[in-house]
Length: 449
Image (cartoon, rainbow, N blue to C red; front, side, top):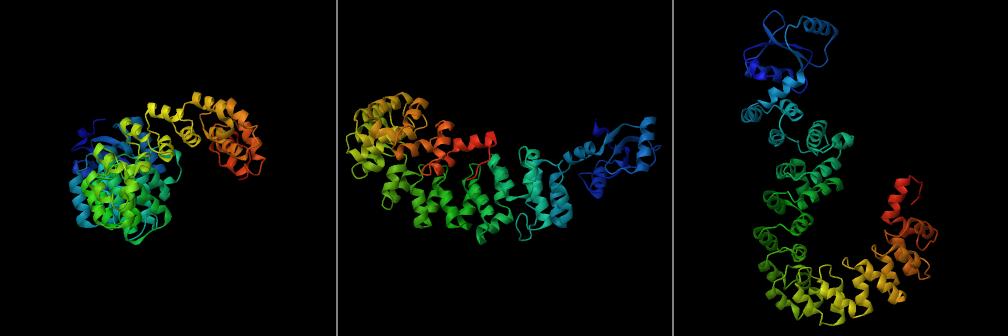
C-alpha cells in the first residue's frame, strides 16, 4: 500500500497500538497530517485493526469490511511506515531535552526502528549505576538489544535474559558500530573500573580481543582497564604502533611480557623488549634477516620455534646441535626439504617431534611404525592421522604409554575406547576423549563421569 497517499486523510483505528505508545502513534500521525476519526462517513481512507480489539469493535470491523468502506490493514504495517519516516535527529534531541525515560524505553523496545537508530538511542539510556540485569528496566533494555541483533534468537529461548546472550551476540557480530556501542555502555564501563562477576568479565575479555573492536575503544580500555584487560589487548595482532608504544610506556612487566609474545609488534618495539624478554622475541617476532642475525648466535633454540623463519634460515639452523634440531622439528611452518632432512637424521627425539608435527604425512607414519614401533609407538599412537589398522595393532601393546596415547587419540576406534574404559589407568583419558564424548551424546547412552 502507498502510505504516502494518506497525507491529509482520515483513518479509523480499532483496538490498541503495538510498537508505539498511543501518544507516540498519534504524534507520528500528526506529523503526516493524518487524522483518526470514529465516524465511517467522514471520508475514511483506511481502516486499521490494532491489538486487543474488543467484541463491540470487532462487530464494527466486520460490518465495515462487508460494506467495503475503505481498505483494511493490520496496525503493524502502518507503524512500520511511521517508524521508518521518523526524523531521527529531531527525536533524539527531543528525548535528550525531555529526559523522558519511559518514552526512550518505548522506542528502544520498538522493533520497527532501524538498527542504526536503535544504537543511537541506546547511548541515551541511563543504567542508573546498575548492571545489565540488576533492575527490571535494565533487563528489558538488555533483552531488546540482544533480541534485535542475535542471529536465530527464536532457537535460543530466553538467551536475551542472560549475560551469555551478550557474549554470543559479540561472537556472532562483525559490526564495529555494535561492538563499540556495547563496549561503551555504562555497566561495562563500571565493570572496568570497579571489578565485576565472572560472566561480565568474560564479556570484557571478549571485547578486548574482538576483531571488530575499534581503536577508540581499545585506547579507552587501556586507560581504564585492569592489568588483565591490558594484557589481552597487548596480545592483539592488529595493534598500531601508537598503541604498542602506549602499552610499553605503562612500564609494567606483565604488559611487556605479553607484548613480547605478540607476533605482530613493530621491530622498534621488539628492539626495546629484547633486553627484557629475548627468548620470547626470538620465538614469536616476525623475522627479517637483520633481526635473525642479531638473535641467531645466542638464541638459536628459540629461533627454531619461530613460525616466520625463511627456508634459508631453517636450513642454517639444521647445522646446530640436536636440541635446536628437535625444536625445529616441532615447527609447523618448516619447509618440506628441512622436514625431510630432519627425518633422515634418524635421531629418536627429532623423529618424535616430527611425528607430532601437523605436516607429518600418514604414509611416513606407517613407514616409521614399520621401522621402529618399539621406540616410536607411543608417539605414533597419539597422532590423529595414524591409520586405523596401525592403531588396532598398537592396541595389543603392553606399554601403558602407548595405550594411554591411544585412549586420548580422537581417531581411535570407539570399540577400542570401550575396552580401554575398563582399565582404571586409561578410564579418565577415554572420558576426556572428544570423539568418545560425541559418540555418547549421539547415541544417547547413559554415562557417569
